[in-house]
Image 1: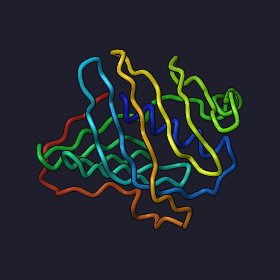
Image 2: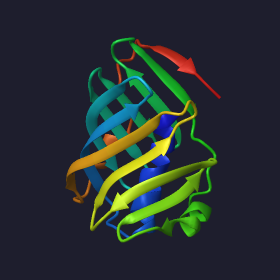
Image 3: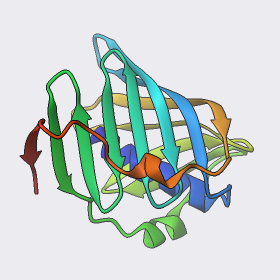
Length: 165
């Protein structure tokens, strides 16, 4: 759910601030709990309609969000397929508010999401369902056109499939 919520934030943030249609970046995702910090790294690509996350650390994972959500976990040799979350992007765009010079906030599925945008999307954070602070920083950003094929799920044909509603 954390990843899905943030994917919506990313699309929201990119559109609300009228930045280019294409966005790619390296990311560092930190999940802060009371006792520890989990760190994930990877690359994200979006064209405002579709999103592809490629996690590279500590484990590989690939997530495509287009008409459905596909999560490929090579270590488990499985793909989880679920419906794209119901979400009215345009209604959320109208609700995004600027708090300070470069800080914005909006509500997504009942959660308050903050992001820093100072000429580019730098950082985003929110509190997840179990009280952890989820923070994602974006590095090495690019706004060049992204090939369409990157948004099409690619995984071995003989993986196990899990279908969720």
